Image (cartoon, rainbow, N blue to C red; front, side):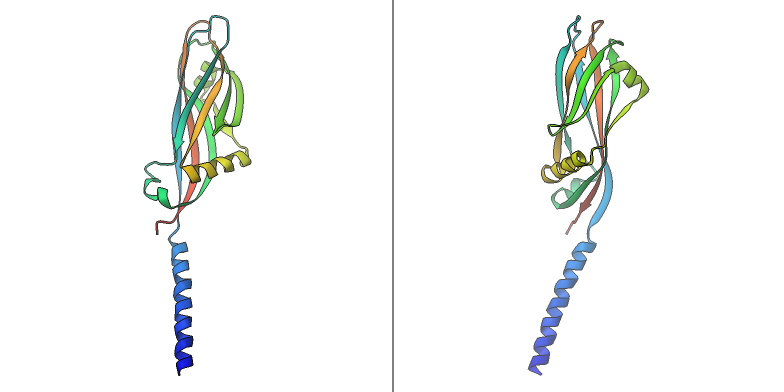
Length: 177
């Protein structure tokens, strides 16, 4: 009888432990959200000589969708990362030779007339899986990354002002327990 009671006690304990593990896994919440931020760029009139510029912006994982789960995030996957030029004003012939970085890893290099790209609504996409996974890891561990837009500009007719809108589509797995 004592052996049976011990056996049942151990069995009950093991089942309880296994059930807790399963319940915790069942509590995982998976959802998609979009992180959007803007890098504001101002370039003074250049008068024939290209001028360097370097603008940065922190992109945070903290938004209305993720805020309640920030301390319980188990996984971050990036589904898409892109940027586009919006809100252009200034020299319509102004050009830039630029690199886009996220956490100091070069993502894209472009050379273009800013107004043309802004008017066209051109979207520049980052597709390198290794880089996207590195950014996802940085978001998971630090909950933010730094986007940097740097290069040289030539705008002889007038100053140039524009905004780089960065959009990151992510899938989050969190466990609120």
